[in-house]
Structures are given as structure tokens and as C-alpha cells.
Amino acid sequence: MELTPFLKIFAGLLSIVNPLGSVPIFLGLTAGMNEEERNRCAKTAALAMAVILSTSALAGNEILRFFGIGIDSFRIGGGVLILLLAISMLHAKTSHVKHTPDEAEEAVAKEDISVVPLAIPLLAGPGAISSVILYLTEGGMLSSVSYYARFAEVEIVIVLVCLVSWFFLRLAVPIGDKLGATGINIASRIMGLILSAIAIEFIAAGIKGLFPSVSG
Image (cartoon, rainbow, N blue to C red; front, side, top):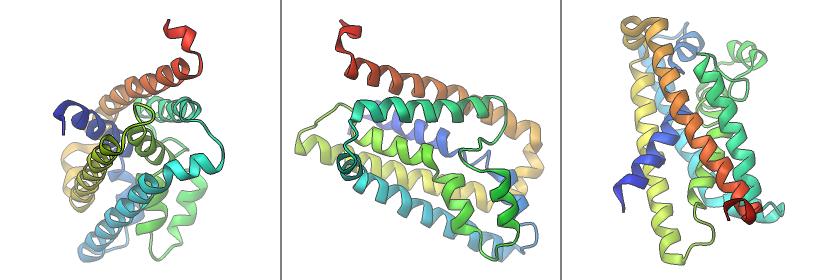
């Protein structure tokens, strides 16, 4: 497993999930919970996130094949979606792609918010699901060995990102107290900058795949 591509996938997925930026929302959704309930909610959300992203990695190619969607078209569409997320992060805002005001109001009335809306769509939203499928299919049609090696990389990244997310959510109260809104917004903007570059790469690769003359 090459370290550089692995780190690229890890940095990309972590930036999309942005667990640090989810801390204020998590604190708001769990305002009426005690520490034990909040920790249990964080653990359940991280596990649900791992299941959702792993299922996306397993079924992504089949879903694209079923709907007759080419990987290059999906690269462009996924890249645009990720770019929209990045732009919202650069403005220190939560994109409506991940969490809408209506969903926030509905979540207040829920007894269990760990799976919906916390795990999906806040953490494992459309952007994270798209990126998992894109990273798994990066490089076009791969040999069986290369495919399984890439699948193992993606699965390890998913586990690591879920662990990081659980860590941030479990320590949401002290993180919120220490960093405050300004510190969290600065970190989100940095991740948004990284994410915007990754989105452009996806879009450029998709355009080159659909229009080979562009790269020539």
C-alpha cells in the first residue's frame, strides 16, 4: 500500500466528513443529554457511518452499472457536489447538501438522532458517499489485484475517519469550550481549501475521460 495515495484518500474523506465542523451541530442536537447519553450517541453515529460508507464502497459500482452511469460522468457530478461542500466550508457554513434547516428542526423532536440526521446525512452525506465510490474506482478499470488493494485502502480509511469522528464527537464539549466558534471555523476553512482542490481533480479527470481530446 503506497503511503501517498493512502494519505490523499484519508485527507480527502476526512475533509468531506469534517467532524470538527460537526461539533457545534452535535452539541445543539444533544443539548438535553447527559454525558453518558452523549457518548453513546457519538459511538452509534460513528458505527452507523462506517456501515453506510462501507456499503457504498461495496455497492457503488453496481449502482452505477444499474443506472448506466459512466464513471467519468460520476466523477464530474461528484466533483461538483464536493466543490459545493468546499465552498460552504470556506464560508464557515454547513452546506444544505449535508444538513438543511428543516432537518435540524425535525431532529429536535427525535428521541434518537445518532443515525438520522447525525450519521446520515451530516457525517456520511452525499459528498462522503460519492468520494468513497470515486476513490474506489480511481484509475478506471483496474485489475482484480489492484481493485482489491484499493478496496482495502478505502476500507481502512473509512475505519480511521470513523474513529476520528467518534473521537471529536466524544470530546465535543471540551473541544467546543477550547476552540470556540472562531477556532472551529478556521479549521473548517482549511479543510474546505483542501477539499476544493480534490473536487477540481475529480472534475478534471472526468472531463478528460469524456473528452480525450482535451488532454491531448
